[in-house]
Image (cartoon, rainbow over all chains, first blue to last red; front, top):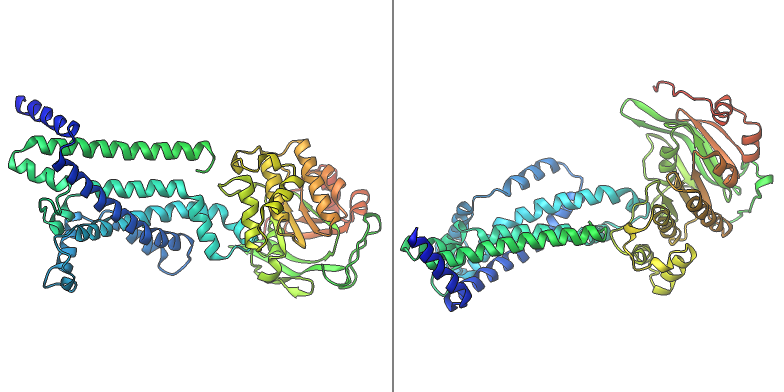
Length: 235
Length: 258
């Protein structure tokens, strides 16, 4: 117990002193996860919108598959990306393994289904509400899609934040494709795993505090967005 | 408006006898949902300029008929034509519809108008202001549309429909949940649009409103056309027993459908 309180005290000091190593790890974590969210939104939002607005054979099966992909195990994703990017893999020539880019790819693969599946649900609800009015106004499909995405913006931001939460807290995929290399690919989750195994509980706890604070901030942001949207009847 | 169209005064209105007086036409219109026949072989000639009011008991098929005439639903049999041509997308772009519950975009009042003007390639802020001014919503231009009162929301929906400059305006019980003042405001806007040459097709349950607005009345019963008469004839001496019962406030029980 004394070890724990001592470690906790050291952790707080690291956070309050803005320890350079700690800041470097946090910055890389944010860079990787925010990039992954941006890529996941670029791919996932159009997919979700297309499925929400489309009527095609196999639509229900596609939705089931997309929903199932939300639960992709990070280690399996990490393994698949590893196989793709390793020297013997089809994309080995790109020499991306053990780089932040590989970690971004792994997290993007992991959260794109989340963004696509959740945005499909959000856009579909709105699409059902607008459908008859849009048909009456002869709104072209491209304009309808743009209008739906814009009008669902608050809910879709929530979706993006959910994706970010999942990405930044994930460890399995990034440790496989990133390798947890100091000053290169070490992010918060991989550092916590390593420092714990080394017995450096202070740094692990400091990173844990930051991670939990980040999770709380993301949830607070989601709540604030929802309240704003409801207040202005944009939800 | 189609060539040869004439403005027909309310008290001299007669059922259209030739194409010059007929704007819309339904021939053998049938709409089925599963085993049920909800619109059952309606033949209709819709006069070119009048305010046509559609009446009938709940479940008579009024809203369905409106949606079929506007092309929101595809008939199971029969066809709808406007200006002598079978209803297509180009014709539907010349029509607009206001629903019982206004469906407003999650944007400001002005942005709702701007959205349809952009679709028609005529978006400019002066036009948006003029449209909102006409329906008395200029002061609310920058407010979120969905925070307006029920009456204001319906006026905005009506303004948005009229912003497309439609030849035909369909209204599906737009005042069903509004107070008398809001209802009067909607009716005034509809009448102004009609004066400018827009054909009005208005569904209502409100007999007083029908008397105020109608030039001719389409009366439906059980998905069938019971009567299409000039308003005065309909209210003074309805031809069908179903209409007499309806006007007398007697319960009209829906027969089982085929």
